[in-house]
Image 1 (cartoon, one colour):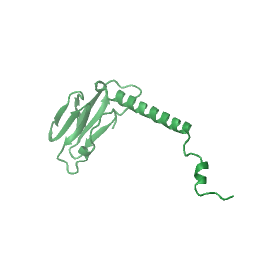
Image 2: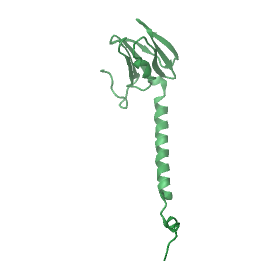
Image 3: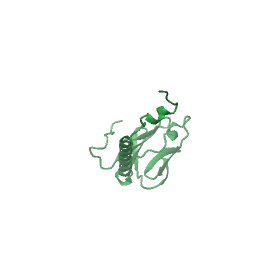
Image 4: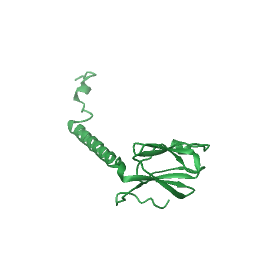
Length: 138
């Protein structure tokens, strides 16, 4: 018996079954929920601060709940900007501007450094617990 060219398409199995689609959607929903939970827990600004180091010495602690620009003492050409519980280098006279390209940091353990100016910023937890990585020695 001769088959028509389109007969194979009718008997072909579907690429994804209904249960496959349900499993994929469940995994995606769980991943999205976990991401939202982690971001909500991490965005609490009251549990973290920024330490400012100049010449490898702790210069000051910066409150991340107050938005604004901060000129680094002794390095007037270096400006930090605090915005929405995050901080970034926004102005520097260094040649490569790598510190500015780093962007905003907001999670405990994150750092940004301007090597030519010997300035570093580090986000630390006010009350560290077992979930926070120990980044005290850098």
